[in-house]
Image (cartoon, rainbow, N blue to C red):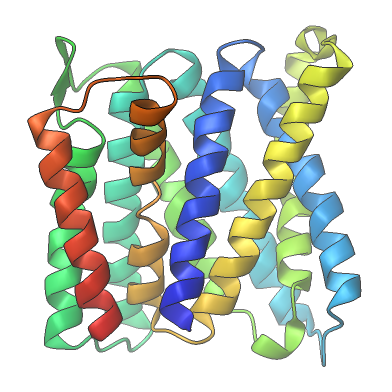
Length: 279
């Protein structure tokens, strides 16, 4: 069940990244990020009330808030990179590096001991994600420059988000997710003030950003449930397969052409899911 929840989280995040990437090219990325966190807070609070917690400790809220700081950094820099049209650069760097850091934390500090099959799945995932996102070269663009910096900073946020949220106790329900959205709003407030002039957007655009953030909160909630039933290393790797979703949507919705590298990456990602599920 934990594996299925992590995969469901990946689907949510993939849809959110696709929608957020498109919206960030129409309105300022700071608007998408900030309204998204407000949407996430709204949904997380509603869900937390519907699914009452057994016991919420201050430490659970702390870990949730720390996770939210990571989320704020990840979404801010990810959306900034996507607004520059560098999806093929930002996504592989943020996804692959975020997976690696999270697995290192899980195995090195939290006592995770993946099986041989799980290790094979983890090993396959990193190059598969890289290939799915287009590899180091696409449309003549090589890695480097501001987009790579955006991806690296986003990857640190991804790792903090996943590792922090996984430390919350199951009895705390979804309140750590809500605490994380509140912390993210606080962290992003200076950016919102700086780009205040860009917030004069049509209500429909702001509603889209709000809904995208609600979707991200659902993805985090699913990941939290998965991390409570799976080792952190496995839950993170499965949840981090989200780049496959924008790729598939790009092929089917935007009618983009699949490259040979992407086809190999998608096959590798599918194999990694099987190995991690069996492991």
